[in-house]
Image (cartoon, rainbow, N blue to C red; front, side):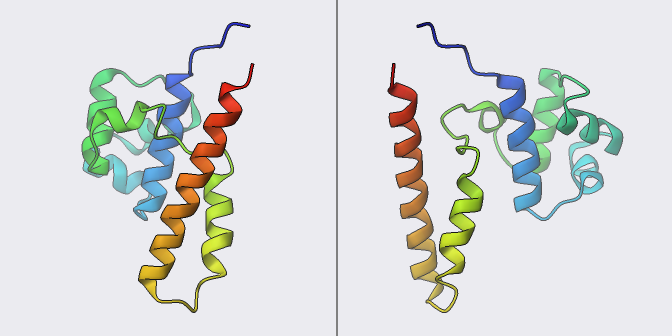
Length: 122
C-alpha cells in the first residue's frame, strides 16, 4: 500500500500556531515580529491562505526558529502528544523543575517512538 506524502502546508500551519502559543504570543504580536498583518497570520493558521516561502521565512523569523522547523515532518508531535504530556507533567507539579523537565523529555521521546512504530505498520 502506497503511503501518502505528508501535508507540508498543514504541518506548517500547526507548527506556527503551536510555537506561537508556546511563546505566549497573540496573532497580532507574531504579525508585528514577522512584519506581516495580523490578518495574514490568522489566514495562514486557519488554512485560508497558503503561505509563500517568503511568508514562511518571515513567520519563522518572528518565532525565532529556522524555516525548516516549520515544515519538519519529524519534529511534529503526534496529534494528542501535547495534551498527554501536559497531563503527565501536571501530576509532577510538586516535584523539582529539573525532575519535571526530565519526565517531559522522557515522555516526548517515548510517544514519538510509539508514533513511528505505528507509522511503520503495513
